[in-house]
Image (tube, rainbow, N blue to C red; front, top):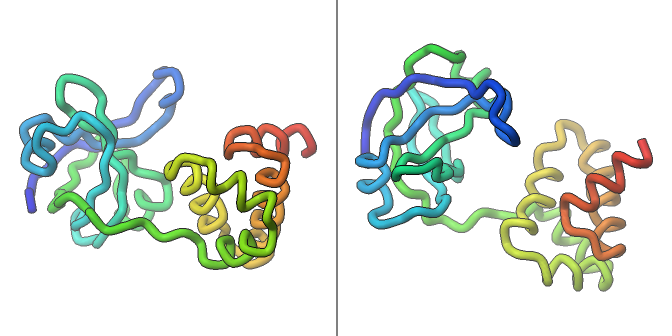
Length: 168
C-alpha cells in the first residue's frame, strides 16, 4: 500500500480527454504499485477517507499514470479541481464483476451471447458497466434490451451506442 497526496487537475482541450478531472500517479509511485508495468491497471484503497476498488489508472507517458475522477466520485469526495487528495492505494487484483441481470439475459439470447463472447474482456465490461451505472430499474431494463439488440446485430459497444444515437 502506498500513501501520497496529489492535486486534482482537469484537462482543457485535450482531444478525447477534454474536460476530464483526474489526479496523477507519479512514475516512482506507479513502480511501487506495479513494477515494470506500462499498461492500464486497477487500484483499490482510499481516496481521502472514501474506500474504493476497481478504479482504472491509465498510462500518460514517462511512467506516470492518470486516475480519472468521475463526477459521482468527486461528489462523494466533496472535492474539485485545485484541491488536494490523499491516496492510500494498492493494485486491485480482484476480478471485476459483470452485471448479473445482463449475464442472465445473455443466456437466453444465443446471437447476442455469441457476439459478447467474441468481444475483448474490456469491451464486455463496457456493456456491463453501462448497464450497472443505470440509476433506476427501468433504465437498467431498457439498457439490457438495447445491449442485447446491439449484440444480436454483431455490434461492439461503440457501434451499439452510435446506432442508438441515430435513433434518438
